Length: 396
Image 1 (cartoon, rainbow, N blue to C red):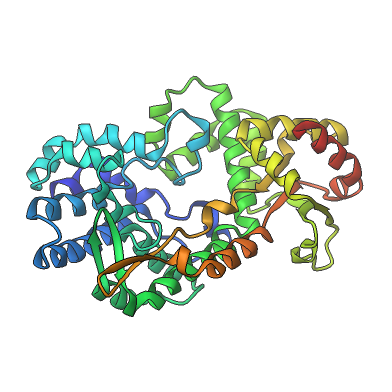
Image 2: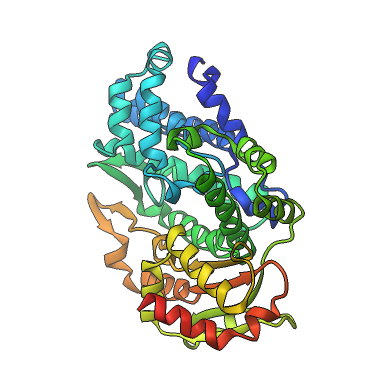
């Protein structure tokens, strides 16, 4: 297919699906290329069924899977890692790339203008791919992440495919298969708790982000040039840079000498969630208001300022300290599921409110803020009270 052979698409072979998670789960070596093919395959199957049942036109059934094939074309190196460092996100970047690939899209029988509207979420048909519960993107990456990490139970996709339809601008599942849909929701929650929000993965991600920020501060790089790099290319930039800080950090990163945590903030009454295993880690309970404030100061640029002040406080180089928030857990709460029964479309959120409340309460227990260091964690541990005071001063 012309699209797959385009250099922009081939680049996805070298953009990891789970980024720095491979440090913790060595099998998580899958990439955006294979995920894109998986989404395309699932979308083809679903859209053919919808045409046969009269819910989609042949034009729609041709272009929606092509959108699925291209939905991640805009991802930068290490997937979401650089999104907060530039004015772009992967959807905006992807829409720009669609303009470069018009000829290939038309050769594949697609309509570039229609597909760009799907990228911009201006057509509800985008939900076939992007629905937060049962979209083809979600179904593929959950199945793929489970397989490659070895965590979780593979989702019951067959039951979902047999009873899922596109109706009135969204995905709706037959009540007969509602439990399969809920199983996928619970799997989504489990994978975020155990894989995507794994503390070492978040530390490695912030560590790499800090290196890229130092590199960007030294070079005038067009943001689009940064987005065009793949994982290996950005690592090569870091490896070949002459800056002594980057040399130190790159060596630590590549040898998996990750920053060690000396201080953790957890939601009040949830401090026991932190596994200490005999390590010198000070755990401090804080209020929901504290974490709401932290969320306002969780951009890489704001964290860099806090890290510098902590480093000055404990007399260590600023590039050796990282602050790692886990404050955005609310976005991992699965969205409402719509199901149909006896000719009616019903909201699961309204019919089973306790089910959703339970998921929300469970995720709150994963709120945290870590202060870590490459070197002697005692410097963090022994100054925990002073660091706590400093952080409160910065965020309030």
